[in-house]
Length: 430
Image (cartoon, rainbow, N blue to C red):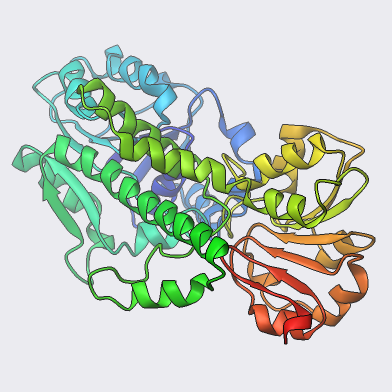
């Protein structure tokens, strides 16, 4: 099929590469906010496993062409929209272009997270001679290629047979192991995407509240988590307390869902609480540090492992580390930070600072001369550190585990104080 992909989101790049890989003729028009000359150099795209390789393969094979202007495009059979919420007006402008005015039978696949009902509105702009489906973006950053080419499921919002048929054919190569499509009306698919992320965020925030209570009561939250997850009605997914979630998609989907509620006249106290709890939890490690040093943080050096909002990505959008850095700098603390991928994004946001040193290779360099270590992002390279080496490097011998990935008793047995989210251990108590 002839496919026009429009957008500069990760979902646009992945769709362009994957559809070209299986033989479709793809023309990809990145959004003017991030043309290919810029996009091809950004760390979050280049760090995605397999993605750049398949983009380059598509360009070399001729199944993928990257455009600078819409007027260079051929008439497509399918338009694949993958835009950010802030780029909704660009979608309207594209679909009203004279290039499509006299055409018939184009299928619009809306892969963007727009307000509920937006696919219908865009369809109306194109005209009834075309058709449209909502195919909400369900990619996972850090494994975007695998989640597109081997999906566990896809939400397919369609209100007519031709749209469903063309979409199934377009994605047939990625639907061979089992039926992955969950078909429903367009509006239902758009709301379902938002509702899923709202539920996942609610579980995370609820577990973080329980972790705070466990801290107060002197209970190890891991026992509580195991007990809750062992209940078949609950399960273990998204039941891990931590120092807050971030990311461009997860965070804005929550905001979008809250907006949908508000616009429909239904204020959501629950969603407001979920978002408030998450923002508060981003300060958890700082509060533990403040308590340990009785508020005397000026002149202290804090080592931080991890800046990305999750392992496997170079992005720091809404990442907990941003809140943490602001709090530390406000108190006169210095920061030595290691992250294998997100350091360029961090410097692009905060610039070069005397109270910030960054490292991308050896994580122990960030700990030299530091008073305390904070684990913020659970990259695999941090899971099994040399504890005795850390004990010799950290002046205060304090480890603050923002993801609860370490065994408190083992860390304490190596002579360090451990503070997690709802977990703790001191050498003297063992």
